[in-house]
Image 1 (cartoon, chains in turn brown, red):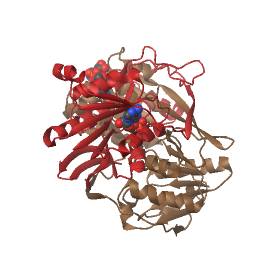
Image 2: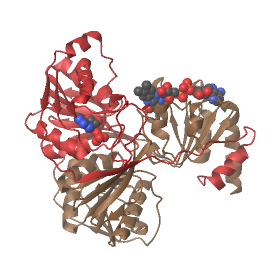
Image 3: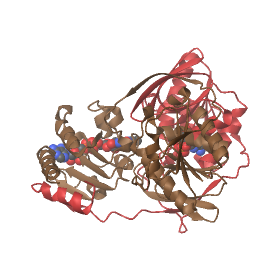
Image 4: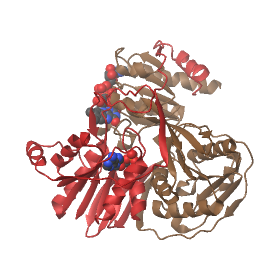
Length: 320
Length: 246
Ligand SMILES: Cc1cc2nc3c(=O)[nH]c(=O)nc-3n(C[C@H](O)[C@H](O)[C@H](O)COP(=O)(O)OP(=O)(O)OC[C@H]3O[C@@H](n4cnc5c(N)ncnc54)[C@H](O)[C@@H]3O)c2cc1C
Ligand SMILES: Nc1ncnc2c1ncn2[C@@H]1O[C@H](COP(=O)(O)O)[C@@H](O)[C@H]1O
């Protein structure tokens, strides 16, 4: 059986949840077994996960599970794995998943592949799994041989697919350990899709000249339903908040569409974005290195072309 | 204060990545290695700052072969008091974690620092694994860390936000951007690094539950399609019909 741990930040199901369940369902199909989803703490609408292929959706209740503690979570998930005799455990490669996956692997004596970019292939009793390495410059294929296998799934690696109906949520009881971490406050930005989950990202660099010019970027992002990002010098000079910084020393992202405006395309920047499916580069310098990594390019002054691109997309959206 | 900082090295981002013909081994010839930025800029520097105000020792630990000693010397030049190298070329995060946990289990560190992730494999695995072996709390992706007696106050990055928390010593933490400011080693640091102790210890046996099968290079981009600046409708059409991303 394939058990998928579904993270539910603030009790909500996010896109990563549907991706993880879709991936788990497809893995279960490959292995000729079923897919069971596990949620922890208070969650609304967990039964929805049935639509993405979970034949059962389980919930371990407990207020203590409403805050993340990898120690408590991995103990609870391990016990569920034992009770349900799961042979594969799937998680999302998010900050929550990364906090848990390593612990779970040690507890379960399991091989772990984190940041999987594609479905596994079956090789006898082993699984082969691919992931991007060296900042997207290579792909590594691994084999997990252990009886229990843990895989964390890279965001945007699979598209959520509805394949069945919602199911009823069943409670599951396990022993909960006491958390040694005391959470005092949580500050979140609601309404904005975090960069790690965004399907479309509009990113801008020093070519913007001044932070007061960001209106055109925000407008373009709003039209596309995109999340905004920036290059490192932009964040370093406090033109934009640090959580927008992408690249080798910022966040690595892999959206479906990355639009880079006034960014030169230094290797350290590309390191965080060149796994994007499609890259559009807008730069006035035809020699900018970013064009080598781009699918589509516009050589022009950004102040002129970004508003026009925004208008063209608005027109397209109105017509479609 | 007894602080452990786990140091890894990665190829410089500008390095050309290549493999042996079978694709089973990374070709390190001619590759410039750097200390993993999260380990160097944030974890190591914050550990040194804590030692400077509270006293104690900072141990820099690296699992790797003698070829990597330049990286360890740099950690000493930045401010670690002593270094330990576990003599093994680890083939997986699981192996690295087993080696680190075996060493640390006998040492009673107050805080064990990791970087958020290595920038070559982006696994973010080792810290959580070590915490589980040692049965310690693990605070991942901490962007702030201060100590008050035996209690630490931290901020950590979570999906779409930041969380403030407290945890008592001892614990394991992984350092994200914000925890400290990068330090460039000065001449004095580089000189004293030569005289600081660097101990080599032998690894324990470990059979990794997952192994590399093969590296491959991704297909090269076919080349950029240039669109005329006065024809943004064409770009929108391509993004919709050809790339299918909007
Ligand atoms: C160890 C290390 C780690 C690093 N990590 C990162 C990282 O994580 N992320 C990151 O982004 N960088 C990182 N950098 C910095 C990186 O090397 C580059 O310096 C940085 O990405 C450049 O930012 P930029 O492209 O915004 O600015 P610039 O290099 O100044 O480029 C600005 C671009 O805008 C274009 N432009 C200017 N005006 C206009 C206009 N009116 N219309 C259209 N185009 C215009 C220019 O032609 C130019 O190409 C790192 C560097 C080091 C050494
Ligand atoms: N060979 C190593 N020796 C010592 N520490 C390591 C080694 N590899 C990884 N680490 C530590 O583990 C962290 C996370 O690595 P990873 O799980 O590979 O992303 C790094 O930032 C280092 O602090």
